[in-house]
Length: 102
Image 1 (spheres, rainbow, N blue to C red):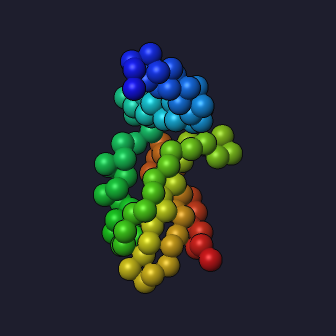
Image 2: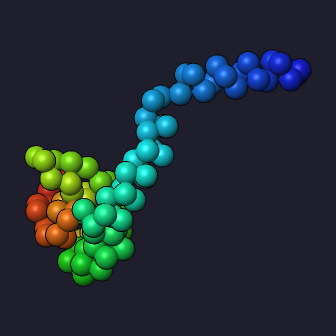
């Protein structure tokens, strides 16, 4: 393959990528800013509280806004085999809710 063809192919792939892919970098930057300004707790400090309350395997963690609050959402496969979505206030670390998945 010639170089021009590869460059064109790369440009086509980049323009067809979903917009969310580039958003991930911005999300990380925003999360870091919120942590640095004290608007949210670090994930590390919150994990110290999460693990004893919800033993098992953490499948996913998201930082999102719900009802005007920034929350950490944990998806956890408990040692009992039940998957739970666990929500914590990102500023205070307070447990907000627990939802069991079907």
